[in-house]
Image (cartoon, rainbow, N blue to C red; front, side):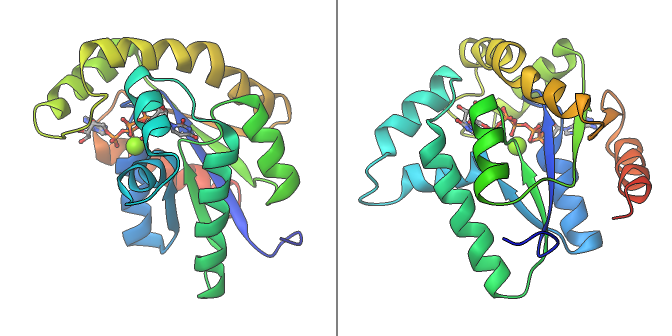
Length: 195
Ligand code: UP5
Ligand code: MG
């Protein structure tokens, strides 16, 4: 996409930090298109005839990162479809979570406007995910998978946050707060970046 044609805000933060919850609010209140990389991967995994079903299922359960080719193709397709329908403002949630993805996406698809980074203590995220796991049906909402997801986040995804932070493109939010208080912080962050 040519510069300025679409606006992409990355939403990063640990598992259970509340990315999806806040993105859903922004869709309702501000009309953003919300693309969760995890949701796109889960949909692809469930799709009849997908070549990548087993690979995705395995990575999600083990908390590892699906090869970037798969995830970026899904995101690119979703962005194109929504753009064709007139959308310009995208929240890309849970992506990029590895350096190669960050570089490829910004080279091939679009530069990000900035990144919203959801800071939250692991213990808080753990409690949220275990609670959600009682009803979510997600194969990775169990203590084994959650532990692995936390490790991948620290080792593989935090370097991406640091990379954008060095460019002055990260706004940090304190997410160990009630949903509405986080939501206030999100609004201020968007305002401060003119979005
Ligand atoms: N909740 C939310 N906010 C709250 C608050 N302020 N106070 C109290 N409770 C709050 O929230 C989690 C739970 O907490 C919910 O029950 C919510 O009600 C409550 P949610 O908004 O769902 O948090 P979120 O940060 O979105 O958590 P999620 O589990 O979705 O995060 P992950 O980043 O782990 O999951 P994702 O779906 O992005 O990725 C899953 C897997 O896909 C990855 O582990 C990886 O294997 C794979 N993946 C890739 O390989 N590549 C990618 O690019 C992306 C994903
Ligand atoms: Mg999510």
